[in-house]
Every structure is written in structure tokens, then in C-alpha cells.
Image (tube, rainbow, N blue to C red; front, side, top):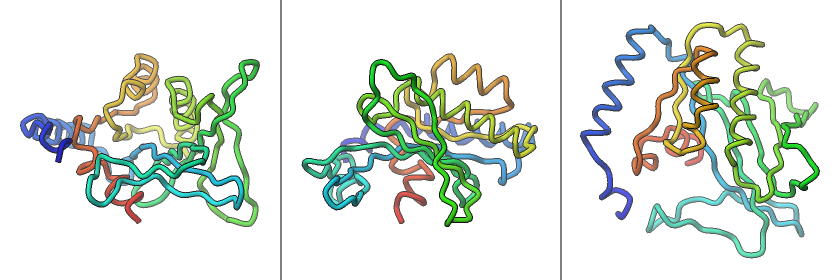
Length: 197
């Protein structure tokens, strides 16, 4: 496949070795491994249904995008096999509005996972939206009394590697492990476990 041919195996091996070195050096337990990723959702306003935009069967790098539907982005943070925090980034930000994360509470579901909605102009996660997501993650760790180092797996996107995110992570005991380019469809835990369901 097109993406697969670009995979640098030595880079992947170095990444895996370095990650294990970090885990051993700081003695980070499995329960403090976190993973964050984004997936697009299409909304049909007529029947209020939603559909994940998933890789097609024949070409994993092509995407099935429903026609005539607004799209948003779902961003869960997974801890072990459960959702730790979740965000829905929706289109519709007005120029006069400030980008914030508003919590949506569902009293019927007795879920420990909080859901926040963030508005951007397009419904895509941008640099500012991702900084808000990281700030909420830091706040939740503190609320839960998690003060030791945690390991956060991310895709190697520019917004995931911005100076602001790196500084925020280093100040709050978050060690970031970036999944090598062109390998996320194989190695991204959220792709292979959570979104695959």
C-alpha cells in the first residue's frame, strides 16, 4: 500500500526501543499509559444520525466521506481500555466567539468519562483546539490525584508537537511518545483497538 511503502523500519525500531527505555527508566506502570487520536464523524441533520468516517476496505489510506453531511471530529483520550476524557470538535465557530471547551453532562449515563464540545470554524481540530484538549487532560490528571509521570501516545502531527504542547507536557509530568510517520494505521492503539470496533 502507498502509506506502507514509506515506512522506515529502523525508525520504527528506534521508536519502540526508546519508548521501552523511558518506561523502564521512569517505571511507568501500564495503568498510566494514555493514548489520544482523532477521527472524523459525519452528521446527517435530517435524521440526526452520525457515522464514523472510516478507512475503506480495499485502500486503508482512502476515506469514505458521506455526501451532504457536516463533519465533526471525535477525540477520545484512552486510559488502558476505557475512555478517560472525550471531546467533540464541531463546526460553527463565529469570529466573535472565543474557543472554549464546554462540558456536556448526561445524567442518564453513569459514566466517569467527561465529554467536552469545542467549536472550530470547520470542525477540524486545530492547534488552539488541541491545546485546550491538553489543558483539560492536565486538569483531569490533577483532579484524579495522578502526580507521577504518565506516558501519552500521539500521532506525529505538527499540532501534537507544538512548543506549547511540549512545554505543557514537560511541566506536568506527561512524557509524549510519538508514533512514527506512515505507521499509525498499524501502530496507533486507538485505530487498531478502539475505532476498529
